[in-house]
Picture 1: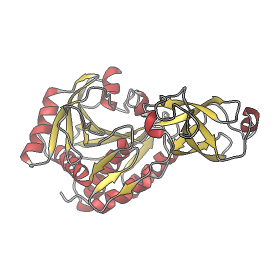
Picture 2: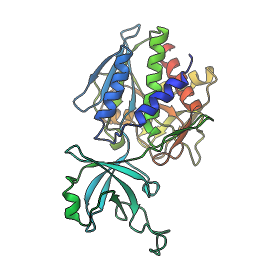
Picture 3: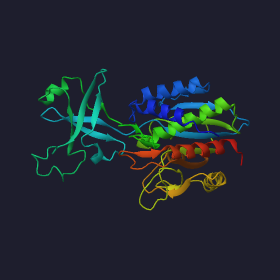
Picture 4: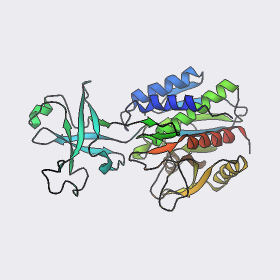
Length: 344
């Protein structure tokens, strides 16, 4: 059960480099599909844009896994008189962390512009509230790195409301094992699953049950897995583990969620995952996520009859400038491996 850290980091780096806010995920899905196809597993795309991967097992029973490819982002909302852009959030970005970040604007005609996300009071030498003004959709804008002086100038660039604004990930992998980047939620989990698939392929391991993996594309807005390609006995979402306040998870753990804002996860399946983590001496935490919903939450709300659970690597500063550690990836990888190859 060796965790290939170099393959994981390479895969994560490649996926993080592709902009994929909810609704604009096609390029990232194509990349993940290429990786799964290269490992020899069957793939398919849903009309919604979710990527399905099927891994044959030893029995006729099928379990589901998911991780989401979509990330947070912004879209153009409108045009200010000076030619700068107003925006609307896609998902739940912590907007104060975006003040001063570089971004790209993708138009529907294929043009890409660069710019900066800024407060409406951006200069400390000019605005008396530069240090104290709120940072929200009404008090921030995007300044383009194009000479525009009016709303009509900017509209002439083929920019329209609804065009996606993607901000830099600022990805750094440190020599001490830390992973620093936006969108570790949930591209870190996507990369853990891909590393697990490579391990199964390289080692010739056949899982105990058939596995259907859904790489979803609308998780950040709540309906990623409201439709499932088939019915599962069990479905485990792999998504970031929360850190902070009275939670016990750290950046080195695999987090097992007992309950989030959608309610408790299946008691028997969650207990089984806890026991697997204990028996293998993994670094793990069991926590309650106060403001969180997962792909399993969406599937259960849609009426699917199955056991559901949620696990994932501990990620600090979620929806902001996130950080985790290779140890969290390894512990999550090992718990997934045990779940798929150790029949209850």
